[in-house]
Amino acid sequence: MKLAHVLAVLAAGGVAWWAAGHPGYESQEQYQARVQAEAKAEEAAKPKLYRWHDRNGVLQLTDTPPPKGRKYVVVDTDAAQDVNVIPMSEATNPPEPAKAK
Image (tube, rainbow, N blue to C red; front, side, top):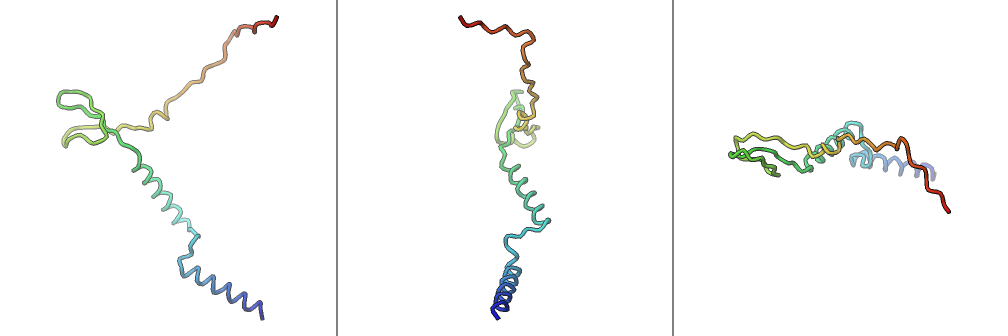
């Protein structure tokens, strides 16, 4: 009789979980939607810099877009991460270490 009660409680819990929208479970579609939303939010949170020339030809770099009608370029602030860095190589003829006296 006790086994029947345990099974009934488990079944009722399962039905309640399913009716609540199965919290804690994420389908593949929900996962993809969450990942895309996080990527979009991350992109929106990045600071934007605008590079443009004023009417005197002076280069301006601002965090707000220039006045309407003026051409501008959004600066890629992640470009510094894409710079190639060549590590320093070993010396071809290293000096011999000094001898202890």
